[in-house]
Image (cartoon, rainbow, N blue to C red; front, top):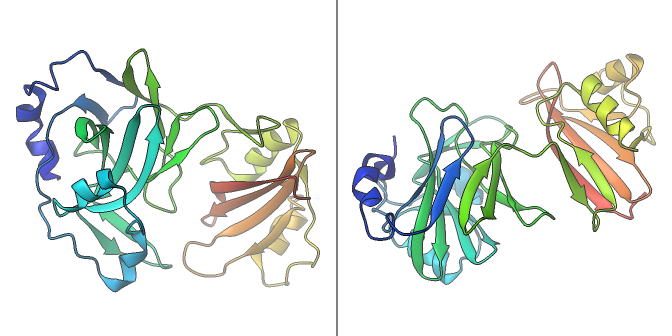
Length: 267
């Protein structure tokens, strides 16, 4: 478990931790606390070449502060007046080109000063990962791939709050709405998508007979385009609406949604 977690008791009593900054977590197994300092990483900040792609390519001055302490910075993003930095102490190589983080956390800075930290409990099965900006102004928080998001980070009431993933998300200047289908089997997910105006797109070329997508098409999931036959068994599905195109990715033998992407105005 992360050295940061072990030292939190000392941080909570720091001047910053006892200030007016409000922090709250609605997610079981995830904590968000006010802190004023970040310890050195328990590792040296190096990465196996296999996992090097998980390191953020460019760092702001804030991200560089974290990296100088031996942490591997994985993403950065603004959140209102704050700067968010996600980081880990290292990564374990996995299958299908994936790597899995060790000691993954989220640091929240106000200018050059660390003001809060989000971390997982020892028993948490889904670590905190990189963040992704939402049209709402909040940040979506991912976990190790091929897992789906664990929650959202919001700035509210002069403070910070971790919440569950919202029931829906908007794209294309709020012209497109995608319901929260993460983790749902594709047969259930597509019903939610269709109800929100996303029309299934049949692939231009029929899937090969040995492609699992062919089986899904026979089961009525006509938008199944292709599935990988090895590794995480990813499958791709496409939908469209008046706002754009939606590409959905599932993983596993019983395909469950792990990610999606909206291309505005593309049909």
